[in-house]
Image (tube, rainbow, N blue to C red; front, side, top):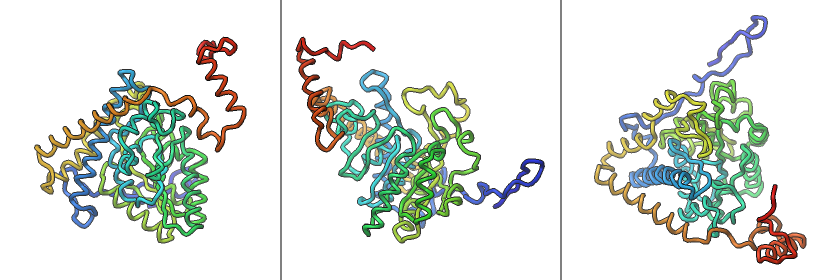
Length: 389
């Protein structure tokens, strides 16, 4: 609906879309009930996705513990946001590229990224496919069409639009899925990407993970819009608002968005409404800027509890099955940690310049040789480890 507010000098402000125009789409109720015609997945898929969600949650908890122990330097988790990650990723085709933000490692694991390889990325060791060139939680897995992650927010949005535009020119049936947080909607790349996608009806799915916080900045300080979905209106594209803690709602909305894109009806901006239950990362303490009473209501909306209730109601998960699932997941993670930590602590020195240029420049080859001599104790070369800032 359209609402009028008073603007300057008491005159009516321009008409504004309110949240009622973008109702929150939800499928799974608190008691686990769901309309049969909106489930959209086989029972085996429901159980498998619940297992992935539990693995992701358990992994996040374990990696935070490892960071506190000093075994990894940094971690960004997705506790409380698992339904958004797995609901969107499961809805795409294996041939669709995924351009992630920081919290979508579950999508890479779902696509086949080995768990031990992911942990190697966190360790930055010799098993890291990024060769230690990236921060932790900046994984990539080309076999799964899962791109690397950029620390500046929003940059992947224009990359996704470019990939979709190229696919359209080539006639490929490929629809990229790009993730970003609500904070990224304040970025220039958000405007440039959605504007170009809208004008050219580019086949792409924009998945905004609205978890309420951009590090310490709440959503209401990021935008005056009542919803993120309504921003789609300005770009002439479809906007949809979905319960981001409801795996079936997220999955169904993403399936529809992908179908529209593939049929030439243009992109969709999905606003997945969820909540960041922990800090932005292990490097910040949310208690310094976020009152605890804001978090508590969301604990009852935990996406794992919702899925567990659905499975129990359908006779797919009992106490014995739940206990076995948890034990299996913990064992898988324990074995993956052991495998990852068995790699040498650092990538080979020769990989220092890999991925910078197609072929190393002569200057880089000289620098590498000089570094090797210094580390070998050549007195004619200064040891970089003794340099003072």
